Length: 74
Image (cartoon, rainbow, N blue to C red; front, side, top):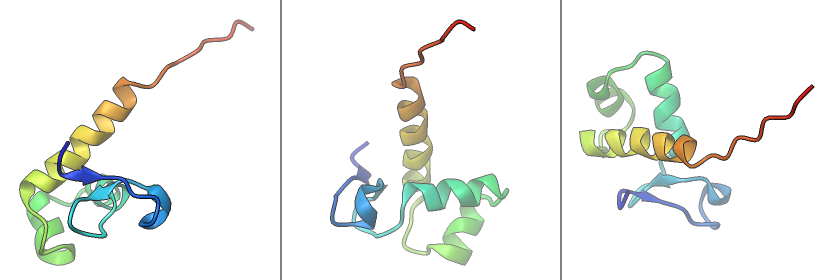
């Protein structure tokens, strides 16, 4: 997770790839559109590395894994 940073002064505190201003959300949205890691790097963010994209996925998984779910009976 050392590749992902959060700073309230950058993108309103949204997580981003350390050393860049590229948000995790932006990368995940491109993956959701079906782009490959190679396409994301070549066409959108040439400064990224494959490990940066993997870190975005790991961050999203960790966020969901730590989410507390409270079920309410109807």
